[in-house]
Length: 374
Image (cartoon, rainbow, N blue to C red; front, side):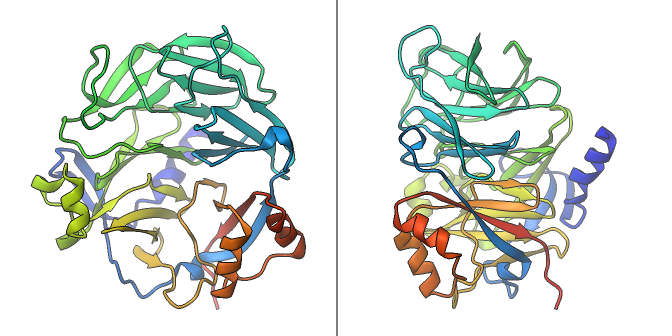
């Protein structure tokens, strides 16, 4: 089964232009390159088979102010609200199950949720104030144990072999209280002992961001904000990975401007902002163009970029929070946003969805992906 999975996750790249063993200006070996076209002829809507909704139960314990990270796993939906230091969990029907809301100074409590990850059994919560990775049961929220973190980290994901993948990026003008090697990634074993360090950074690196990873059933995607390269790992372990570059041509950030966010915005240079989200043959790309962020979709079967229509919001895809099986998952925050979309051509949802939005409830929007043949 592991061999079959490896073939499956590799297959998405066979249609990407190959630049094997070539290094880019960030001194990273590039295995594949996506040629970016800002104005493609094909529309994302042609790759969306259907749009469905999950209504999130609105009770006192399920309240959250924003979604910083969303994971769909174990038949559950895990929503991280880092500002309020909580993780809210629903089932796939949207029913509230439990919340991890344990900010405090007790032995089973954390001072922050910097980020979190979920595997088949546990929820892992990063607390950099205490340098601890807290572990809670993924199906009940019960506290299980904690692990000492040897370095400061911003994000975490889990390999199937029990190892962890942690991400870090320097903050402009910031400094760490302790010394750690200048690496973007740390591979650690199940006891948080460092096994490998990957991708060195310089103090001139651009900016940090909220989340550095996205996942599918068998892949982990890593990206540092401002980089034109993202890395795809097999979920099995950290030994199998590919570096994929997005070539923005004349609009890419020049080497001497890569750490200057003001020059980047003023000149309208293009760069990847959010961590790319993969879904079967597709890769959703959030691209910064001047002062704007746009969602583009790379179609691995056709080898091209698709874009939302400029004339209609019909089946428009805003940058997804995650993917789940053959679906991209987005969040609809309120009734006003929904009405604006519908007025611009987005297909109306069923009355129960509209009523939930009017009453202030949260709604997940699921896009089932797959080319529609006329």
